[in-house]
Image (cartoon, rainbow, N blue to C red):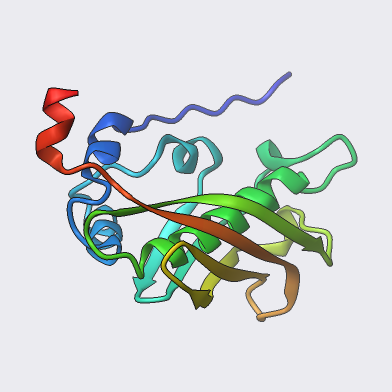
Length: 170
């Protein structure tokens, strides 16, 4: 007999429309407070944004069988999604209103196997360097004893967002 899992998510257009209208940190705080819906990918994978401060964010996951690959451990894409979320949001937490970002690359080093027995894991993203056009961030994926499971770096491109008024005219 198979297993099932259901989940729901909020309207991603609401969150997307809020990007750049406030600082990146205020945007993340609005998601934490439930004023903005989390992106659907967080619901799909059961990821949780736990903390956000300037230059640092924390995402968590309690691994389940639904995250497994065919060899009985958490799929590398789940690791990468956690690490990409942490690095990207670490960058976002430093952005002023009117500035957006997108990931240019993600370099992941897988160090340890993750299973349901691993328990809750956390991706801790931090800024390494930020300029006018690019930012560099890193993330550490750790277990409950802070044992390093994976590490990633990501370069992000920074760019101006159109003002809210021009969205209605476009």
